[in-house]
Length: 146
Image (cartoon, rainbow, N blue to C red):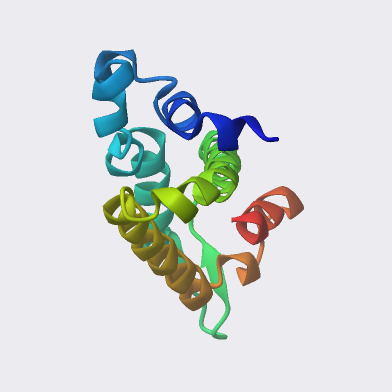
C-alpha cells in the first residue's frame, strides 16, 4: 500500500507545505494546503512562464526568437523551467489525493488546480516556445518538458 493512500493529508502537507513552516501543522496546515497554488514556487514559476511571451520577438522572415540573450538570464530561465517541470510532476503525483473518498472534501482545490493546469497547457500550446529559433538544446528541451 502506498504511503499517500494511508496518510493523504500528511502527504499533502509534506509535499505542498514543506517549505512554508509559518503555515502551521495539523489542522492549520490542512486548511492552508491550497497555499502552494496561490503563492510560493508554483506562483513564481507560473508567473515567469506566463510572461515569456513578452520576451519573444519576430523576425522579418516570420521566425520567432527568444529575446533573452544574457548567459546569466538564460541560466536562470533554465533553472526556473526545470523547477516548473518538477512542480508539475509533483502536482501529477499528488493528484490522486483529490479523487475517491476525498473528492468532495477537496473539490475546491481540485477544480482550481485543473483550471490552472488547463490554462497553462493552452498557453503553452498557443505560444509553442519549444519551436523558437536559436534556442540552445538545453532550453528547447526545458520548454518541451514543461
